[in-house]
Image 1: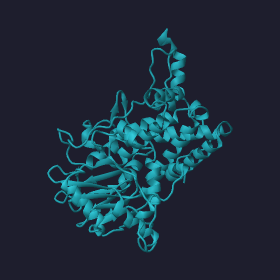
Image 2: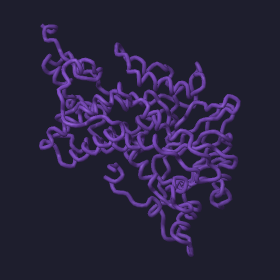
Image 3: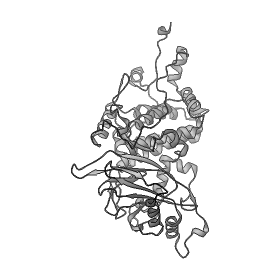
Image 4: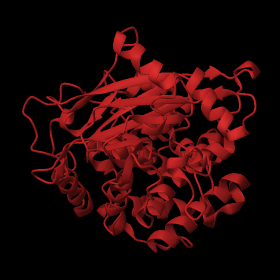
Length: 453
């Protein structure tokens, strides 16, 4: 598997720093609570999740209504677990490796706390300097809530292995989905307070039309699926959440300063538009751009944000519409972007065909596999992804000598993943004809020069 985490190089998260504890109190039984890409049903004694590695994570939740037998709207909040260095003095003597770091994390690791607000059905952060937080931290340090805290690692243990086998595969998978999201990205993009919720987006017809372009049947179906999974939208919106601050991504380039020939060229190959976007909005920092790309996917995946989906789509279309940038100038960007795309699609396809296992008495089975089905369902025959990805892969595979070998290998791997998972043919380039280009709303613009004369 091609992954961001593998490319960067990773080590066991507990080797140099303590893992954190996310205390989540008073959540109603039957509600959905998740950390990162896994979502579970809450049991009676649930107090939160322990053994969470440092870095950026997402806590998602939805209240359960037993009368209506349905879940409320999903809220996803981005959380940064601070890094607390682990020293030899912290290590518990006389314990095996796994037991030692788990106890060390409880005694010395960071503790973050939330409490359920039943009236508004939201989680509220417990203030760090409050008596309530002092009590919470004391219960964690004294191991008095140890049995009521689900484990990040044992919760994702590999099926078929006996006992609570410690495995970091879930964290490696999460790094593939979020490895570029850091405090800088969150400061730029995340809503005030860090909470993502579809109610805060207001207009629920974003997927159905965009200017004069009517959206695909798949996107309309996705819109209906997300709407049906939530309660009736409140006219006052969501006071605990806000809208993400996504960077405008160029789609159809319309610039009066460009000649007709240049305008056509910019839309046929959007490398110059990508370069301008990176310089003007990201200070030429490719990591920030990739972080927003991952943030948009996760806000859709875990927060059911339609705006997140649209931003993810726009960035994908822009990347798959580039030629010159792939061969020179932005090769490293495309290598990293292709790894991210591979991980995003691989996770979505895998979660559709797998089921989570109950690993802790305080957590029930997975509710919805973190929205993986929602991602997969929109990848239908009328999906933008089919037109853009297949065209991109065919173009590079047909001109393999012109591309960096590592980049070419990533493209081949992505093509195999798409072909095996969706049965889309990603073989040699075929002449699709001008009609196919005109039918593609995200395709290049053919400029009538006579209109400029």
